[in-house]
Length: 147
Length: 97
Image (tube, rainbow over all chains, first blue to last red; front, side, top):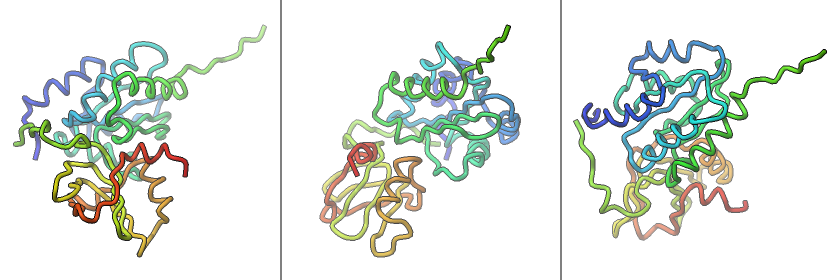
């Protein structure tokens, strides 16, 4: 049963204001993850304050400098049920958890952060994990210049 | 439509994914809702049963540490008398195998 839209509004806005596209339908997810080009970062947002309370600020911090994904999207577990189910189909071998985070490169899942690796950590620690993943997967390729 | 639950009264492990060792063949991994005199209350848990293992205990825990567990048990209470230990999943991960 979904939570009150009023209650989750600030949790949605915390990511939307950082540049995340809210994916509220299966079609939204298909447009976002169906695009196989470049890197795409998806957050499965959650009401749970125990973990999501650090996941969202961690993601915002990680995006404040350094390499970053080409596209940012989010689905809201327990709220946008159809969109969340469609997003999870893109990493169907991984048990569902929320909040969780997935990074795709050229359409392939290259990094995943499940809920239990967010729980009990602070935003800086979550951001550090994300920055490391972005540095590895999203840094622009260096093309050697020959004279 | 749901509203926020009062979490303040719950155990410090509330919301944390834990490993519950029992005095028998079963080991549970799941999100702790609360711990009280009745036992450990888990949500979205899975069970490893030494008596009927599809995976070894080490394999089960390694998979849980990497990606979590499938929520085969939406809610389960491990009776207090059967609980041998409760640890955070990530803490178990940090132990040498």
